[in-house]
Image (cartoon, rainbow, N blue to C red; front, side, top):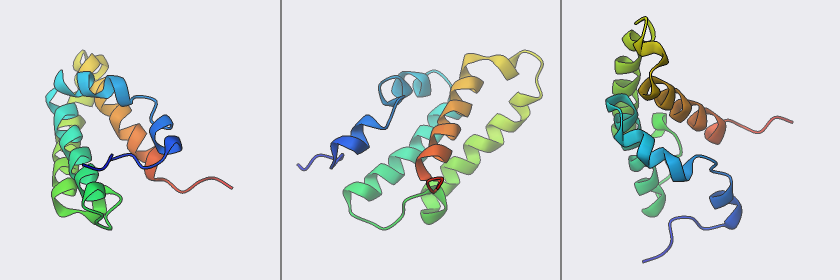
Length: 104
């Protein structure tokens, strides 16, 4: 089996890669977001062209479900600062940083 990560830089530029799994298992919204990422990583293994959630319908569905679960929680007085909400937001931020074009 070939390694998923093909370059050292790609592997090193994932600051939350070691803790993300634990965070995603602790909260339903974060878990569903991790499923969206899993679909994208599977596409990388299969050498398919999708590189973001919009490029894969299954990944987009998980991403949308995660967001729809997150939105009401942000309005809740105590849940909005819960570890699960914070980890889901961190997962969304990591996605935005990973797939956004570089600033020049």
